[in-house]
Image (cartoon, rainbow, N blue to C red; front, side, top):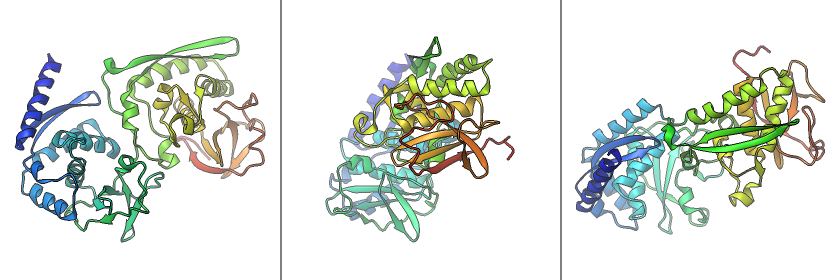
Length: 400
């Protein structure tokens, strides 16, 4: 019955869009429903190829309309569901899609995204390239890779829609900023994700994962949600302190972490870490990102569990998460030119220790290597290579 009602509401929304008047809409947002309404009478005035003047006219027109209830509804939904900025931006995207479908008029869809983000207090900017591409930026003061940015008065603005122009050369087709500053739009945007949505339990699928430890084969039925992949589809290369702290969703956590805790119960700490290391190493097939995705992509722990293939970045993040949740020990991430691995601090170091800021750590290699590496052993191909500690984790109850 609920699905039928939702369908009727959406059908009504489409019909109203066509008239260019008040649009009422509801859509599913990662397991919950968001409903609102807004005036779409501006839609007929925005051409496919947008100019600076079109943008200014759109802003003048939309500020004359009453969009406060829509923005208030979005902000209330954000607060109720504790959305980080990245998740809130997904709500902005889906709302803009209702107001002006992306495949109907991409420029107009982007204008709605920009307006909704600025009306929510974020310092977002627009630019147009000589090739008539509309580029959407947001103020961000974090260490972000993989996407273009520009500087204005010492502030860095990251491109939010570069994935829509995957083959564009923004050096050759340089964007020209649109001089339009929105009052009250001053907040910096953060890519930090500390919480995933509470998806409905019925939206999960069970994936069977197994690996052999000693003479025993362990089986897991892990609940996974494909929406996690969609959430991180265009997520950029964030700082490792952000990347290593992306959590699992509630159902996935409940289907895996208690089972792992049960399996390592009774083991010594060292053997339990070895178990987690070999689970991460052998329970998943390896494939380089260039082969898997055609580019470098770091997957969150839940994406790694869902994916058929993963590489060293993904396994390092998953192993780090498992050790943190089950043992909560100090760890460091060691980045080599073509590899990343994890080292853990034990009461007594194992093998040749890695000393960092006065602490001794033991390498725990979570990615399959030519050698059968034990705790404290580093791959022979890495022994003479320089590395950089890109993340250091210290539990809150740890004493130096």
